[in-house]
Image (tube, rainbow, N blue to C red; front, side, top):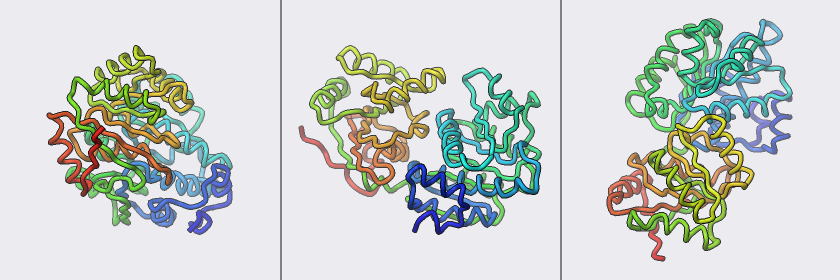
Length: 372
């Protein structure tokens, strides 16, 4: 199937063609027709499956078609997402896919001055992409009203729960009009997320693609058993062997990310850390340096992991294994995207063997052990 079969209008198809997209992913193929039928949608799909385009494309089309009969430049669509990186990524997608339709959007998030964001809203926006905290701040200051929202997208709902945003989300939902179309996306469906979906959605269509228990098929997985104090040496060995070029490395804690990046730089390997304590400018600069291959190693924590979208990333290394098995699947989903091949390497010390056992139970297979 191609995008031409999904009832998308010519301006949207032209933008997709410019981006080199021909065939939709399964989540796009299943979701777009349902959204265009103005149905509420409950989507369960892991990161990296193309969820953003699955809701951005039909939103752009429906807003474009409504321009002829309604006054626009007032916020008609709200996309709520947990992190700054994801908000920026969604904003970039709206800009790319919507370049042939006259739909305005504004991205708002915390950690930076609100002035430019407020000015953007005053100039008029049809789509608002927001993180919960900054949205509530600007609502309380009366810079934003949600009274005319026609479309509400809750993206990465389970991550909202993990990050403690669930009460903020409920406060925002209470300010939305009762009559609206709601699109709800989550990689996992714990009970609290199911209860939230029941509150939000009315007779929703349900789409499930690649449940989180299924690790990415295009990712080759490996594990090294190594003592904790030897992990840095093993990482440097792999990087110096020439087998691994640019790599995204995951740690559990912010201070671990900073310490590891300093250690790599001392060893002559260009590295930068990215985590929640970094300023927005520092995070975007580090990400851009990594995408441009100025930085060889990007050390990240899970709090920003889902906002990292890098084409043709071949290697992910779990320097420390996550204690939540679903997080492992999200991490390795940074590679092997859009049909490309990738490799995920995990370092496992004695105390992390229980984490490895839980991960292997979730993905339904044993990860090959490297004997080197």
